[in-house]
Amino acid sequence: MKIKPLLAVGVLLASHPLLAKDHKVEIEFDVDQSGPLIHKDIYGQFAEHLGRGIYEGVWVGEDSDIPNTRGFRNDVLNALRDIKVPLVRWPGGCFADEYHWREGIGPRNERPVKVNTHWGGVEEPNTFGTHEFFEFVELLGADAYVNGNLGSGSVRDMAEWMEYMTGEKGSTLAEERRKNGREEPFEIAYFGVGNEAWGCGGNMRPEYYSDLYRQYSTFLKAPKGNMPKLVASGGHSEDTSWTDVLSKNIEQKIDGISYHYYTLPNSDWDNKGRAIKFSEDDWFNTMTRTYKIDDYIRANLAKLEENDPEGDIKFYVDEWGTWYDPEPERDPGFLYQQNTLRDAVVAAVNFNIFHEHAERVTMTNIAQMVNVLQAMILTDKEKMVLTPTYHAYGMYKVFQNATSIPFDIDSPEYQKGDESVPAVTASVARGEDGKLYLALVNMDPENAAGIELDIDGVKAKRAVGQMLTADAMDARNTFDKPDVLHPVAFSADLDELEIPAKSVVVVELQ
Ligand code: AHR
Image: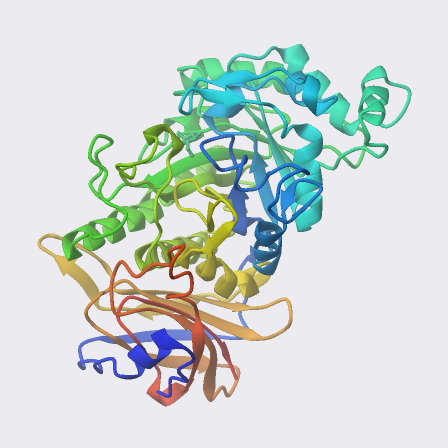
């Protein structure tokens, strides 16, 4: 393998210990076979009114000293454009079921100030509302996923919000939107009918929620060609009852069922685990907890196969990511956490799993975009840091709308005691640009892996692309040292392909 070192991290890597024979991974595929499309929306993001996710992170206002475009931070906009964010979900989360859309339209200085009771009890100025959200996604070149309020809003509120956003002519609500500065209807790709109805969205049972879904969705109407995909709020973690009941009870106007899964290293909400300065056991637990989503998705998809064998109802993982203990000196309600190489590996493991289930898993949103949980970007006043997770998204963007290629993989296990995960997982796909891409992630923090490829249908000789890794498991970018970790160029002959321990590699096979 020839690693072309770029900056500091690349130099460290060139001296990485070579692998032992038993760390060999075999991958076999035929490039003439194709699997499902890897929908670009698998790379969606979640932006909630939570902590500094929206205010400070995205929106600083037109009068800010921080360079901005009509109130949106330029640095954040540019960074998000670079990773081709395809979709943004807003306004929550738990916040969505407390959000009343009328409070976020009209002159900004006349909007009511509320208390964000769910997240930190801080003032919610409502200066970022419907128009600002659509302006933001349009500046990004992304699609919009709006989450409606079923928990504390009425059927009428939800129906009128839809009409306000999408109405064309002859309606007072569409005129009101025009008066507020937007002539053309907004385009909504997805609309969520409530969020986490089993918890913060109303503490319901799936039977009751599915009746409410049927009722609310009946009144969600939009002009032809601008009707969003409707998302029923589903279950989480190992639970399959929501997918089961919803897919049995809801017969009309449903495009997908949502599902949430967070990686907590300790599986304990009172002691989740640290974001930095963690042990190898913590790393291992993070990997095993992350990998569990594969089983959970399979179990949910099995329910969908039973109840919807035609495959009409998609499975949207519209919240996922790592969730660690809050930093001691910060407001625990803000869910701000650092982000390390471990998070990039977690992201890549999830991408590979989503690709494998791309037939039904056509949309996911990492939680969250800026300054909250497993963020792409951290900000501190005028400073911005791109996280390792951001870089994983950048490396994997070639998989957006790629056609997956089925493959067999035989990997050694990364094991401790009775528990294990495959050390290496992968994705193979034909990109929209016609090129053949391979992604590899090595969860083992100690051992490099040799990759043996058996490819039918094409004579590829070299792997050329990018790699993300570091010596320390918790390597990270900080406001003082913002560029410790970034992808470096990677190239290797295929008969000598090796990837380092704890690494993410995305290459074109040439
Ligand atoms: O992402 C943070 C919160 O996690 C969301 O508001 C909620 O839907 C989930 O419980």
